[in-house]
Length: 308
Ligand code: BDR
Ligand code: CA
Image 1 (cartoon, helix red, strand yellow):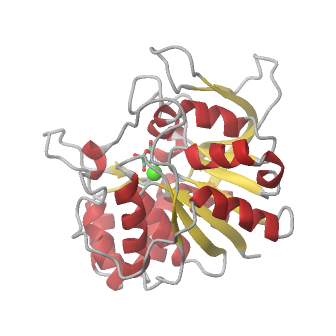
Image 2 (cartoon, protein in one colour):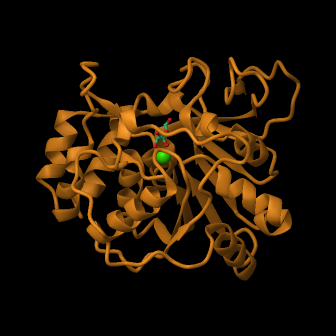
């Protein structure tokens, strides 16, 4: 069965690979539209980058909508150290021919969910969850028509990446993450516990550069940005894990658990508290991917993108 997907994202280098993987997988994924949100870089760049990646992948017909330009309550935080000031460090940015849609992303999402049969549209969310939370605030009943929400965000045993406690997408808008985790619809989450096992390095960059024209154009974004002398040789392919799961769920181990987000403490702001042992007594609300066959997922992502 082909999943009907609205992709909410903040491209971002690994977001670009997620878009490309979805486009490279038409048997499993039908990308209805992309909704952009502030995150790795400003909204003006995330929406442009989404349109650029569609054009590079010869899919300028996929409409791109602009959404929230700031988080629900906190000031924006970006991740230029991992993505560059353009958001797509490692490739030339350009002005895409495809225009941005005029409708607000949140309204597009709600209109589309309202028009489709209930339980038929999957939302894949790989940036801060602000657009989704705004949709819930505006019309929770319509949002609840989503089949499921597949999220890249959070961390359990891996600890944080933007702070010691928090993963970037949850830290960037913890109040939105908390709202979405309480939405009552099926939620599937891919946090740092698994994405830190899905690593791209020189071999993957080489495979892409020898692939099709889109793969070649994206190949410069695999390696980490080492300008600060970190000496890292690999970077996690966080966001494509969501689509890898939709394509091959057998490559992941997942368990229904309770996950809550810290929204009060400055020390642990945005921390996802993953109750693997059920010790909180709180009801499970998330199918949490806690383990993965990392090399197999990397191979799936690279093999599919290399073909386009
Ligand atoms: C997440 O943060 C962003 O920088 C990436 O695009 C990914 O969605 C990983 O923590
Ligand atoms: Ca992202």
